Amino acid sequence: MKKIIAIDGPAGAGKSTVSKICAARLNYTYIDTGAMYRAVALKVLQSGKNLDENLINDIEIRLDAAGKVFLDGREVTKEIRTPQVSRGASDVAKFGFVRKKLTELQRDMAKSSSVIMDGRDIGTQVLPNADLKIFLTASVDERAKRRFEELKAKNLAADFAKIKTEIILRDKQDSEREIAPLAMADDAILIDSTNLSVEEVVAEILRLAQ
Ligand code: DC
Picture (cartoon, rainbow, N blue to C red):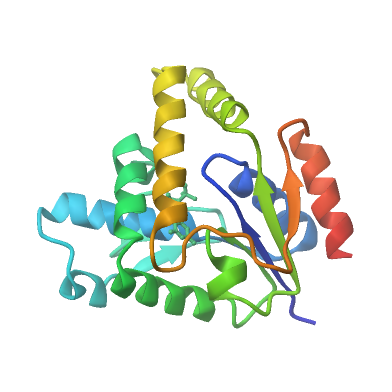
């Protein structure tokens, strides 16, 4: 039977890492909705145009099974991970017409197979009838530390204080926006991963999925 798992939470809580692993173990499709908001932000940044409905109406966003992201037919998997696009994604996510378009696409993507979808409003708005809803969080320091270590491991420049400030700002903007803010659904299960390993979080979600 087709099943839906919704995983919401703030920036850097490890949603995509654990969602990917759980999806592989359960043989579900993983849908990263943050990547879709990032793709919209990239389109705005690269077009040099103002964000309006024309820019969004004919947008084509595709996530393939290997986790690659395509914007209007072009692969943008790496380009959407810059700090500039992170900020831009949180900015475009405030607009009702953007959310409406992406929510429609996301619901469509969840129609044909079992999915794990991660984001900010999946359990509250996109798929309120999900079979299992998780709200995954961790302390700001822990989230900033993970991001810092991720960048270091890739030999990329990393400034802990800057990363922490960016995370705080993005959480604030995502939680305080008027439409579909970051929120825990009433029937979601809270997992605080501050002191948990990836494998421990995965094990808990798989246990709950059963
Ligand atoms: O999960 P992420 O960091 O890749 O998401 C980037 C931004 O996109 C996030 O700061 C807010 C927005 N977003 C959203 O508003 N709703 C979602 N379901 C997913 C992401």
